[in-house]
Each structure stands twice: as structure tokens, then as C-alpha cells.
Length: 68
Image (cartoon, rainbow, N blue to C red):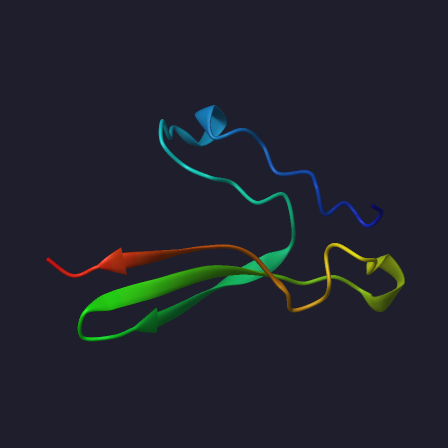
């Protein structure tokens, strides 16, 4: 894939011991609900760099965290 979307450094370089890093440009979508919060990584790429995966504005990872 072109465009430099896979140049994310390792989690150890960020000082994390339990994390999932997405190697792409993009943003985080957070949807809070009374019982939980949904967190998704939304990929962003130029049309020329888009292929089967990733699709522009596609969700590449996500998690649902329950309220305590």
C-alpha cells in the first residue's frame, strides 16, 4: 500500500505494554452510551491509495467498553 499509511512505530516506542496500534492515517470515533462506550479506528486514505483493504472511512478496529 502506498502513501506511507503503514509507518506507525511500535507500542514499546510509545511506552505502552498493552495496546493495539493501527498503521494508518485516520481518526478515532467514540460513541458513548449509558451502559457502554464504543471506540472505533476509522481509516483515511486518498482515493489513489484505496484498495480492497483499507477502504476510505472504513472501520479497521474497534472495542466496546462496559460501564462499571
